[in-house]
Length: 189
Ligand code: GLN
Image: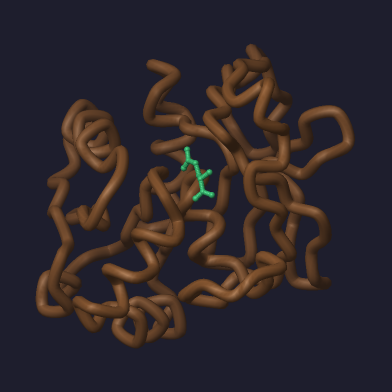
């Protein structure tokens, strides 16, 4: 199975390392033709405005939407979640696939980054998943087709909409591969 990692900006290398550790071929995606033959794509954390602008420049918006429409798996972490959302309360290039409203930088400037143990639906094992939040967004509301997978306090921080997955934290930085394993199962379906 081949999984693409959108490599325009941000923390894409870390996702590649996890995929390789799990025995999966990781393909860096910068051009539409590089999406061919992929079972799924990960959109990494970084700066969502930059990722969006570059995706427009590289003509990736429609091909990524088409991938999602054809049922292949997409996973956005942090800035990737913002880029996949329908509504982020401001004007910036978005894929607009995931029926969620998102608040960027929701945890305030003082507490830019923090870590928290999360109970995540669908993640194997009994121990919690350690979430690394870096200038993280939160999901304010979800549409009827969206399943909430995890919350931090009352904020939604992980969700799934059939073949689409979003997390406001960075599973590629926690040294715990269970989230990537969950995504690989989605991609294999
Ligand atoms: N704050 C960033 C944004 O709004 C996201 C941060 C991240 O991806 N770690 O795009």
